[in-house]
Length: 565
Image 1 (cartoon, rainbow, N blue to C red):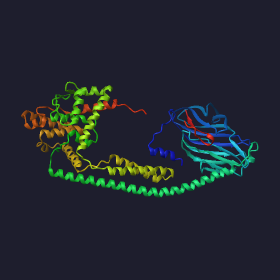
Image 2: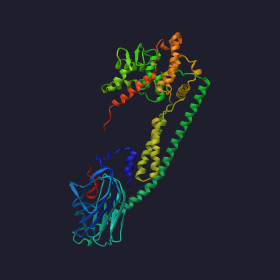
Image 3: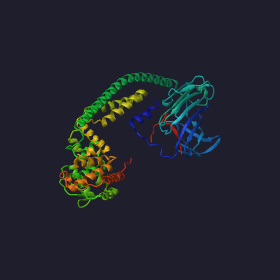
Image 4: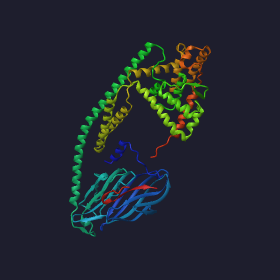
């Protein structure tokens, strides 16, 4: 039962705020002895063992007496030495400075009017802690000691104290609760013979029938709990089994289909021999399709592709000039607007301007608006080519399985079925994450990725025989692709590309002219990619960051807890 609050928190992935104080501590052991007196007062002795990590000034004990009772004479000791105590409302602070120590503090106090005497017995019904407590207790034991030998003892524990009590030889009742977590209640209730408390005034009614009724109610609830537990275990196990089987089948089928598409695509590529793939889809869109997201760094490849198409002239490593504003695609128009007019001036754009612009926080909102628009236009182009298999039905099924697992997890927590809870959590997480990322490629999409994957392999090899037959535009497209994926051999490949570019420029090749880049010289893109990476860092640094008492208690509104300062 005591795990339920913690497990609910884990299931919901909630992060609860910790205490704002700087004191790091734990309470490893708590021993509470309540000595009942013949006049109905209760002399309490508590021993709290604290383990501190770092500096501390003392300990805190909050005690709110139940209605009609009060606490008097609170004192604190360590090894017989009295400690300074300050009281504020229901909070007592015992001062004891130290650092990196384990200490045991003894607390002594008297409870007045904490008992009630009835015709058939005297009752001590008390909450030594309740849900207001913010600290875990590593091991807690509460012992209720009668004034003298008791024979007719009736006792009951609630919540954390349920089924933890046992009568000792002298009639004392020990509630061995063990570990008690913060935020839990744990009232204890003990009834002794009325004759042991001659100085108390009798209330004209009986108490034992009420306690026995509570005992019977707990027994009935426990029997119902066990029956429901068995029912939930049976039904939940079947549902989890069916859900797990369905998820496994979906996963296996998806993997088999993916492998089949890859195998068929590889066979087609091998049959066609060495080539640079050509598609109606633009290179920036292909890169977005491959990478899954359009980051600021991708703009470097998109800019270089504008150079390839002849819309932009590269004047130096740092400077670009817009020479043809009649773009074929909307995202190309948007990119030019951002770089040459929003950041640059007079249809000129430099990487130094990009660096300066993205360093100034005042430009972030305007940059982000234009950048997001470019992203959306790029994504729109990718969607037009339908490279993914429709998967809405499968994803809905996975979401339903995940939600079913979450629902079952709540029941498993309530009925303490922790093995099934673990299975349900794993199934839910896997199903929901699977549904989130499940976007299976069709054959066309698989073929496109495999073709460009083969291009990457060729770039790694740098085999001159394979590259000699490529046109400059084909080499240029590979260069743009390498910039987009930030290929590790980009610098080496550019040397080969620059050599071919220089040779063709000298020969005034019509092939180069037809590429859209006639006479334009492309400078080393390594500097280009580095500048856009720095811009991405600047933009991330300027991005705005998110910012992000109870009246209940134990019996009679009483309770409390422990802490340190």
